[in-house]
Length: 180
Image 1: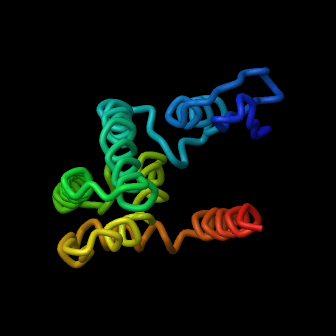
Image 2: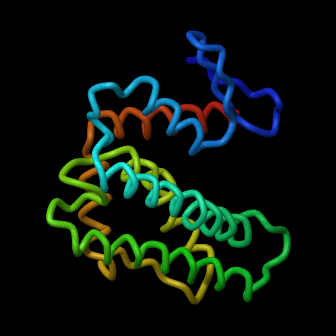
């Protein structure tokens, strides 16, 4: 699998086996799962699980990604401080975590779908890693992961996975290299 940066404003993958080029993150995830995860280690092909996976992936793409992204922009990068925008997106970030926390509290396994960690659990992880630094940029906002105990436990379980540790380490190396 090749990672492409053309067009330069986006990251894409090109599957050398099929020639498929994709640039949208959920499309990439679904393609990789459908094409290469034949043993269902991170997915399900049973009903209702496969539709619940879609539901959570779409929530990640339409809820977590945009709200966390806007929270990051208005709290870390926007040249002027706009308190109403800062607070709106911090509140929405907390709402997304609250939805996850409630769902995980109802889950017998502690995972979003079924009885194992799936690609939808993992799809939330890297954005969730950014909550504390984003919230810290707003002076009268606080991030307390203890307010979301089910989410906290779930996030810690994923953070302990060997593959997740490798990805986090690789991301840190790439970011360190980009700053030089």
